[in-house]
Image 1 (cartoon, helix red, strand yellow):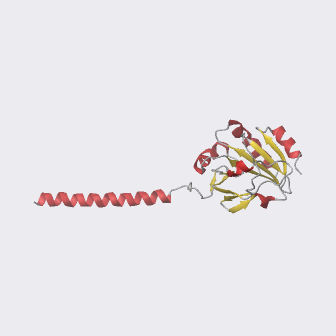
Image 2 (cartoon, one colour; image 1 turned 180 degrees about the vertical axis):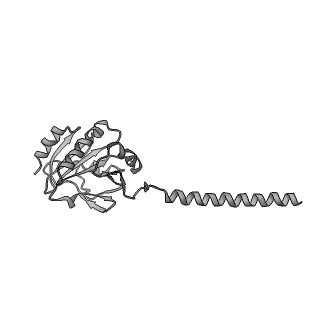
Image 3 (spheres, helix red, strand yellow; image 1 turned 90 degrees about the horizontal axis):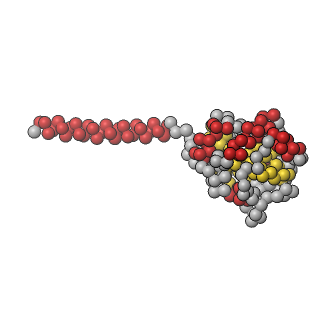
Length: 198
């Protein structure tokens, strides 16, 4: 009888220990999370990642073309929510890319070098249809200093009429599109395109 009671007490203690360890593990996992939850802005190394974006200019036009106002969108970084239209007065590049697109990856250091040498240049790299987690895992491979923006449902890319990647839009200081460039940018081609922006 005494042996059965001892065994039962041990079983109760084991259940309590299992529950306690489960609670501790759950709290530790939450506390150690790196913030990769969708909707929470991240910074991976030097790279800001916008896990939230929203198309503002949802007119039914199929594509954004040179001479028109660049379709507006918002994106959320660690320092708050920003809009493309907030960048009027600056030279802006909106680059559409994906982590699986080798030419996209190859041109990123060229874009980053241009941004670092020209403080008036803003680059927004809008990802096509990949998750924030995938973008966060990819960011250390390129180590760029401009934002990588999640466009999970592809609404921004669709509004800009992006079919092939990479596709890059050069935006004038007044917010109009100066140039649409399809394909990877070399340093020389990038300099030529920037010369067309006013």
